[in-house]
Amino acid sequence: MDKKSAIFEAALRLFVEHGFHGTATSLIAKEAGVANGTLFNYFPTKDELVLGLYAAIKQELTEYVRIHTGNAEDIRDFMRSQFLTSLFWALDNPLKFHFIQQFHTSPYSSMPNASVDAEQTAYHTKIIRAGIKQKMLRNLPVDFIISLVNSHTFGVFQYLQSKKLSKAEQHKLIETSYELLKKMLE
Amino acid sequence: MDKKSAIFEAALRLFVEHGFHGTATSLIAKEAGVANGTLFNYFPTKDELVLGLYAAIKQELTEYVRIHTGNAEDIRDFMRSQFLTSLFWALDNPLKFHFIQQFHTSPYSSMPNASVDAEQTAYHTKIIRAGIKQKMLRNLPVDFIISLVNSHTFGVFQYLQSKKLSKAEQHKLIETSYELLKKMLE
DNA sequence: AAAAATTGATTGACTAATCAGTCATTTTGA
DNA sequence: TCAAAATGACTGATTAGTCAATCAATTTTT
Image (cartoon, rainbow over all chains, first blue to last red):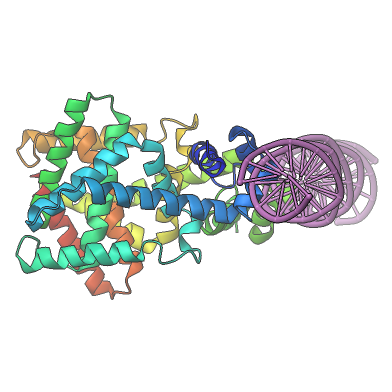
């Protein structure tokens, strides 16, 4: 296994379990089956490991959504697909999704990593503007809509994590949660 | 000033700025204007300080909402008031509200503090059940509704924090966000 | 009323443990 | 053969938590 991936994997698990500062780099190296110094060959500082892990996970999510979103012409279908796919990914990768949340509410999110999410936000902005123009979405500030969609996604995820539901029940609820979101924003 | 309060105040500020493990107890003591050892007279361990701070803040919010929620007979007015009041408090206490979020996505939330939020959840459950019975709320799992309301509140707060709006504009947006929530859940 | 004694809160120097990061050396693989 | 990758012992700094000493306020004794 690729050592960098092994480090990412161990770091993800330990960060979620013990927090960023609560996890020693030496422990990450050990769990990754790698020597202490090797970790610092790949990531000169612990901060760069955290930021690098966030960037990698965020990119993985974006990529997954991009691939699995049918290239729907209809904007409504497109938005629906984006929402559902994100949640499916979150269910398949609960640790990673949790890590994203942990990162966002942590001091790291205001560090000079910047612009990792910038192009994604720009992309979302474009879609939402189109949705508003076509009267699919209520005319609200775009950033406001983005905030609401993100937090809604997070709320649904949290609920699903706390309950033991079958795959079918999960998908049913995700469908419902999209209906709710649509109703709220149209 | 009460030393325990001084410690809480410094800890809140530093935890939000540097994270839980990223903040040294010695720094908290220093910023609180208190000797190192004094901190440990009040809180035998750092964990107990974190958990104690969370409990205190959560109780403050609950108390504030309880007092400022008009004892409305109408359940709809009551729910509306609960939502608006929570957001007003969050706007007046951004650090504390941020801390609550930070805590929830941190490993501390799964520590044996338990049941701090239990009675509050029980209270919310009662209200929501009544709302469903009176056809004000869609018939969805109660926990699901609670998750959605909480995350919605958080989303609105995050947006308001990121923008520089006047008090009037803020209140307008909070009103709107309640309309959206109502529409989604009815 | 003054002095002495008792109390509990407060202090900060201290320690053992742990941390992020370094570096001289060894291993790997082309 | 040799450059790059990997190693792990090591270090200086920092950490959570300890503890004997001090202080201020109150109570008891003279």
